[in-house]
Amino acid sequence: MLVTCLTVDMIIKTLPGINMKRYNNNKIRIDADNTRYKESTIYPSDIPRHVDDIYIYIKSGQRLDLLAHKYYSDTTKWWIIALANNIGKGTMMVPPGVRLRIPSQTSEYIEKLR
Image 1 (cartoon, helix red, strand yellow):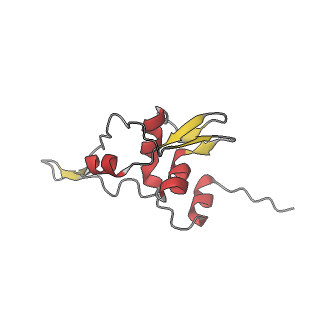
Image 2: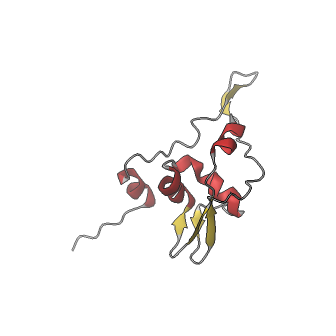
């Protein structure tokens, strides 16, 4: 009997249009020794509520990046969901039973990063 074990990375690679390049937009700095490194991203501190926000309940453990792909068609926007719900510190997983707010007005937060 052949048993196939799929990792999350293997599953993500099968999703059309999914983008896992989280650091593409980070600024690159070069220090005095000519060493290149990417700067940390400083996210906005608050995402106010909006009448068009979506509220969902997590039925089984889900990942923030996959939720961002579902609602924004971009996995790199996971931080918007995390920040709006004060979660995601140290893990991308969201436990079952949690009520999440999916912010609808995201363009202003993304502009703050540029």
